[in-house]
Image 1 (cartoon, rainbow, N blue to C red):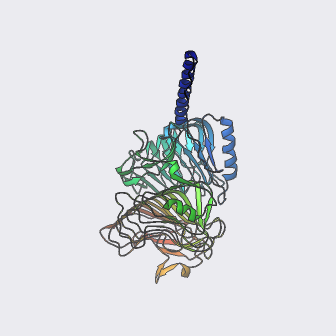
Image 2: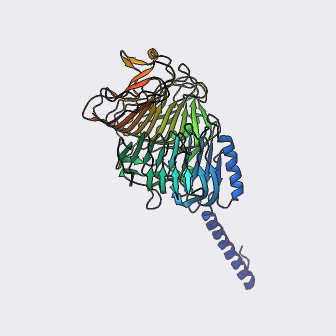
Image 3: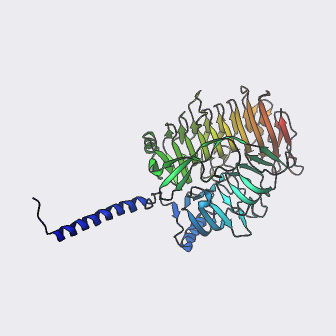
Length: 585
């Protein structure tokens, strides 16, 4: 029943209803425009905002570094995420620590102060400064206008803008890096005492320094000079690459992951026009894994349509994480570490277009795994040229943190796979290290065709470091130390009259293969152990190698030839030689 109300009262009720409706709409609009809640990324991720007091942020940074400065084989993993805006901080980057700017472009997050990686050993020695990285922000260094990045293997430097100079060493102490990509340095880059370095799709005002093997791919202004003096290898364009996916937050506070588009024949950075071109995936389409999650649970989420964000920590796996769907993205934060504990693989990737795995450390378990990671199915003939599978900052370790064993660390069956920076390491120091303890035959075995590798670091495995069976493979930069610890020559003999296993082996069946900028080193710890050939390839017109060198460090053994039977012997101190071969054949 409708009630008859006096006119004044009726007008008042209409006004109140109108005001309530307007308030409801305004609340809904404000809620829609408000920043999304920060996702639950676990206790090992810090999300900083410019609104936070600098002293509070600095205290948390210092606490992480106090734990990670010398924690080479520790169990802590950390990521520090910087929301867009201005910061005044000193950020030392220790082991297993990743610093990430959450802007659409590096310039959306700006740090004034200091961001630095320092030598982890005495006497400015950075040869063990491993497993750390920075990406996606700009830095105005206030210490002599210079950012110090004294690092070695398994360290990434991506999508960075340095408003000043960059030095890749600490007071010219030893260093064994390194990697830089998609970055802009306004001033000079000084490699100094770095043994070797790969720069891909990066821009700078100038570059100084050289040592053994400096490779520049897709660089607009590479330094003057050409192999062998100085030892510069210059490749004008990057033939095909997809930059590493990255986490970012838009102006409305929505968390997303940008998947950069495929680039062909590129030079310079990807973000000249603003943000890196590509597609965005909302973070709510990711399963946010945490240590303690089982591989079965993670694989079920992937099979059900989710992508995967591995939050920092160590994941003990009783079976592999299985990636079967096309265009699945797996992204690790803070050197998320996956470890098979039942002798299985850690990760298997199906023969599916566009799968991306990035930012993961795979650590071998004590029970031997036949392989730690596979990409594609054995014997596959499927092509993925239009949408390649790609691996970015995927690192492998056998031993060091404890006994680890694997026959093969990474096996690539899928054609058209892109490797964009990897270190595949059988430990030469740490726990569980010895010729009969941390077992690993091969670092990388490639069976697929058209596989391209940028920044291939493979060291200390007990047979071939790299065995390449597929056709039309390409490698841009290769760094390898052969194993330190063969106890005697009979234990390190691949065939009658052949000492050791070549570091880089191209199978006799291969008709086309090409590689640029290769350095192979020996550090034999036992007397009378030699390696006959650093590189071994079939002699065919389609198999071509450019710019190779060898060196025998320490005071024992030798590498007799650089490639096949070409190149003089690398002999150790006190009469050390550094043989170089410019072209083969």
